[in-house]
Length: 454
Image (cartoon, rainbow, N blue to C red; front, side, top):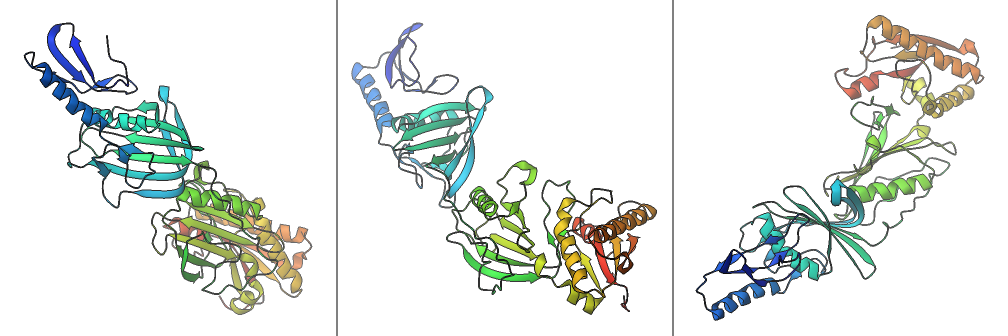
């Protein structure tokens, strides 16, 4: 009779060789039984056979122990150790994909543990031997096999106990270090609550957090900076055109807690920002988990852009919050001082002169500037990058400048105070060899008509 998957050591006789005695501990895989066979001499005494059986029984019955750094219910043979002290990763919230039957997969989210393993004798073993040794200990701890994939097998296991559902992925290979990943599903990530920005711009010291962006619990503020350049708020894949906003931004950097994963950070802050009234842009390619969030707040007279990023490490700059406060920028003062202001955030459809809806907050602010100073007369200038020929870009930039003038006139500004002119690619302010440089060159500028100077 063929031994069944999951049976313990058995004393067998093969039909073709009645004198050959076979001792085999049986282990389960998704495809076939795995047996460690040991042939005993046909002349061996019954006492010798019993001795060998005792040795194998001890081997399989050796008390399992909790794998280092993992919960106690992840039990493995006592000679299985963590690869080294740096191989363990613990995160409060992450996701892992587990293979099931028939090529299907399931993604589970929760508390995350990840570590490579090694044998105490420092010799990696064949995958079949490793699994034959590990499976009895895992099964005895309450784990059930859910699926397997790959020639270098990946096993998915599930355990339900004490109100906690856990999933374990065991990735094996012949003579390579095994990898274990555990997701402990004990509920959703803790809820983060953010306050909405105030009606008036806040004064934020270098040693303070942004009042509307609470840092994660356990994070430490490590620096504050101010940059006199537009903020990159591009969302999407590599083929997306770079989008810039504002004339400057502030950044606060933090040393994040080691347990804060990118997914955990992104999930909590996306939800909290949305509840606080921010327009949170979709994740790149529609899949969160890259650790970057782009959001805009355009309410109560405020116009803010935020870029939040969780990096790949836990250094002093492993977490950064960038804020461009467009509503606080003083365009009137800049026009008095410099005669011109470059506007970013006046956006047009690709290769068209039609305004995109997200241009409205910037145009509303320009409208307010013109209403506050009835003597102010402006030339609205259109500028492009160097993609395309000079005649084409001159025509496109001129049409875009005229579109802005038409919008302002439609909203009550006298046409005599405004003029439009396109300069195409002829007045670059940055290097057209880079995406960011081309984005800075694609702009609308305001220039005082009574101004003497460049």
